Image 1 (spheres, rainbow, N blue to C red):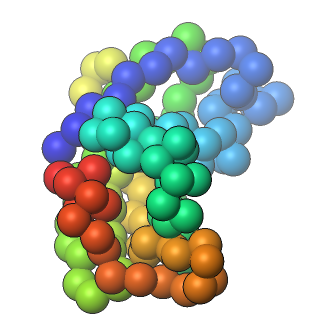
Image 2 (cartoon, rainbow, N blue to C red):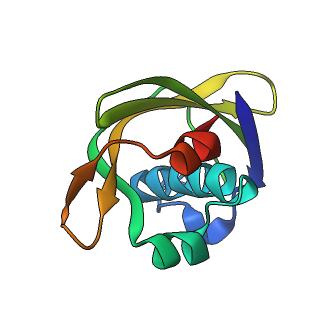
Length: 129
């Protein structure tokens, strides 16, 4: 499991003072990019290989409110990867340990030349491990 930590900015909250629903998706995505980039499979590598991740389904569950200046930690874990389709589970925690949200992502590796999902390559598997 890999952790990503950030502080919620005032520009990320809605008029009720809660973290904007679209920002949850952005933060979870930042956490996923942080993982693959740290393993050497960042945007530069994707452009070079003409291969990158594509989301097939997202399921976002809200549990506790997140407010401006809250420090949150996102824990990400590869649950499974069968054939061309994988699943990542991400959990967002507040500083007090309360789980604020959970995201399940179904994804695959997309070949930009053939415009289709492909089997995960050894480099891609390493970036997710």
